[in-house]
Image (cartoon, rainbow, N blue to C red; front, side, top):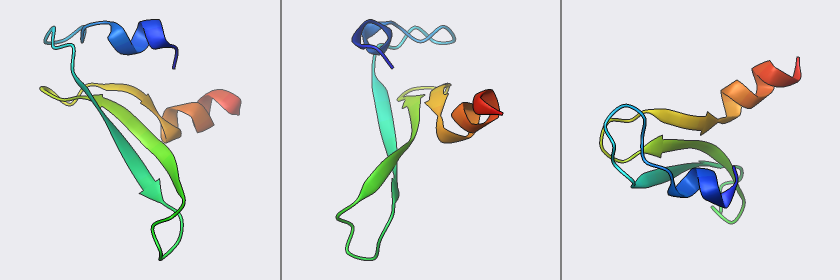
Length: 57
């Protein structure tokens, strides 16, 4: 996701805040992948690992 997209407001509620969810890859919590980027207010998904996998197929 580009920086301009991160700064945009949510299309559903207008909130500018976003939360990045991580997927922990090992038991020591040292390595993680981005799971999803969601709106902090309403939970609208801007980008997710599942959406990216569907696009690649």
